[in-house]
Image 1 (tube, one colour):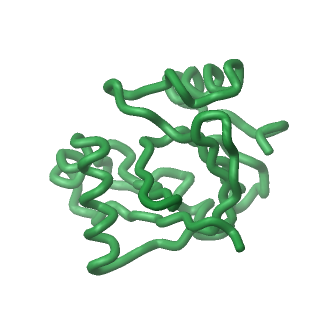
Image 2: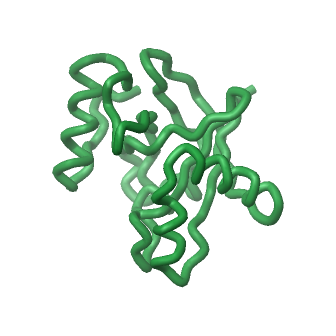
Image 3: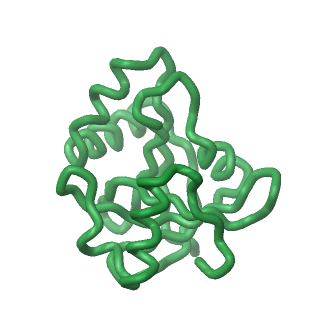
Length: 143
């Protein structure tokens, strides 16, 4: 799934992704000593595969994608990709599986947001920095 996929133009993100691709695993790739998952999305306009390493937020076999972009005013580019094409691959360690993503709201969002902040505490600071509600996608295994 990662063949012919485009890497991020952001250098540190690209470096993380290249490390995962070279080693064949997400193990050992961290942000602030916290593990990441490599997600493969499909471009909303281009249809090209895009690789996105994000913090590992997992619960009972489902994953969350947190569209924080460090608390900037705008959503990350991948947010629009996932809305347009909710089928997403997730590589956790050496295992890659296909999921269907859905943006969650209300109590379900809060439950996943709490898990996200536990997995990566700076998410709470990111929310304080922005007036937008940071979107949360839940990815469940494809049937």
